[in-house]
Length: 153
Image (cartoon, rainbow, N blue to C red; front, side):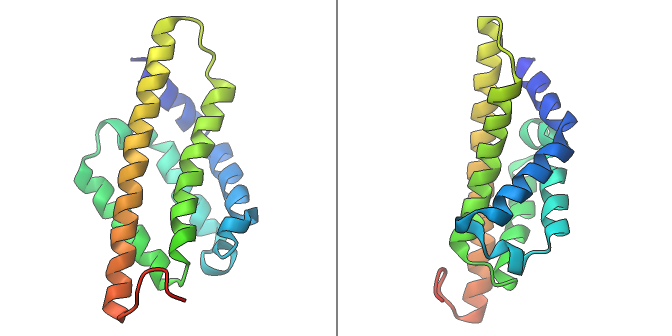
């Protein structure tokens, strides 16, 4: 399966990818609050874990696994006081960072390899869409318990 081969490529570069993404998150104007709210080491560890096990997240973990992980992430970010928009933007950056990596590193020689890359992109899209939904649900749970509205300052 070509998609699995590409997922393994991501896993092999998980440390480098995590460091690059954390740098982007910590320097972007759209995620500037991450520096204050989330320890850099925690962020890097979390991202590295996802990248290092991306084939499991895409191919073997259930929707319940995604729900549990990202609901907890959303709840933690809300408790840390991170703005909701920055949480969602960081998740979008995580997906885009992977796409950029695949564009640079995945050399496509045959049409079947292109199909494999498209398959992986579809799986990544589905995974990150669910991650965003469950992170938002976790974030909302914390803000509702506090009697706040999501996005209220």
